[in-house]
Length: 145
Image (cartoon, rainbow, N blue to C red; front, top):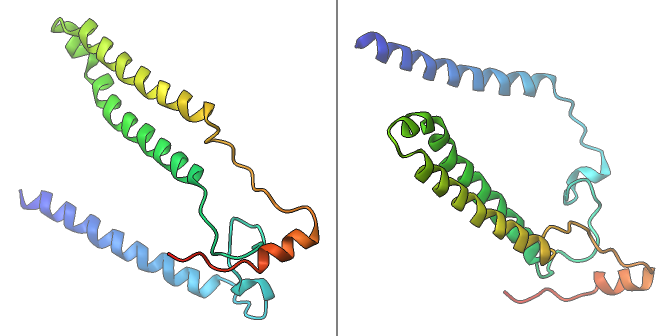
């Protein structure tokens, strides 16, 4: 029993040690460029910021994040059922359990279709075409929270 605790303790020690080693090696080997003009600007997935940061956030991003969480949780719930499905089939519950899994996946698939039909997966950024519109965007007042 003490050997099992020793194994866990060694894994914790090695994990912490590796974390510190990776951070130290990164600090030693990473280049340091402080005069790069874009280094201190807001980073948005490689795109230069356009307009004010105080704009209403598009609900689509929340919908996509929620869809990801739903399907991630779905995988976490269905995978254990699939692992023990052979045992349930031998016990005589195979058709019932398969029906429940298919029903669960069908409801989630209908939710995916609903999100797709409402355009929640369109991932395009609308940038004003003319410079005058860009100037108007830059002069917008912050939205009160």
